[in-house]
Image 1 (cartoon, rainbow, N blue to C red):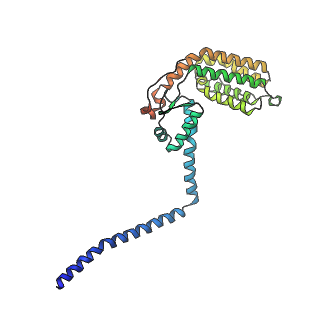
Image 2: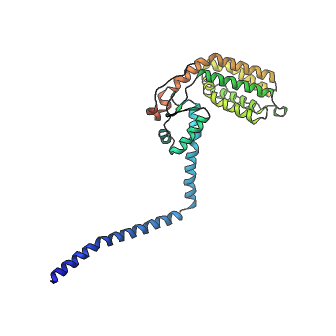
Image 3: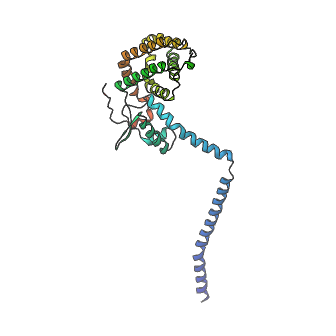
Length: 279
């Protein structure tokens, strides 16, 4: 009889061992969690601020980086832009990338297609020609609307290589954009400068193009310095005329560069059917 009671006691004792052990484990885990929370609350403020700044910095760089890639035609023509690929490339989450793509589509730098998402724009001769024509028209109009107090313009120096000459050309355009003291006009000129930058830079990389443009660009600079509006307009006419003559070759070179694999190596799998626009 006593043997049976001892057996029951051992049996009952065995039945309560496991729940007690589990309870102890739960209590220990709760204590550890509270310690971690206390440590987080007591974390140095500098560390928390550093983490916040790092997150904001990664988020802030998404839009300007993608915008520069679009302006430089760093994607293949009609390439589908997958959010997850771009997020991985920029060390970002999907949300900032999605917001940036929507913003770029609103600016006309990429296309939003129904049921397909976003695709990169191809370099189109007709569109580039229109942008160049509008840019130089607005520059000429800005000279005509110039405020007397905006003169004279500080002389910008430029060397003979393509980078210095390109910077001098852009400096001339920016000086002209500021002449009317009209923020709206200046904003439109700056946007068109960005949208035509890729082709205009290609122009200066060609030795013959650089030779042809050196004189008009320096002439324009000197005209702005001396407040010679008539000569400045003539220099602009010479520049756009020569750009028109070479635009076909520039577009061809630009398309070739956009098709080069190593311009966007991280997005190889994203490339779909490539359809070049008609000129």
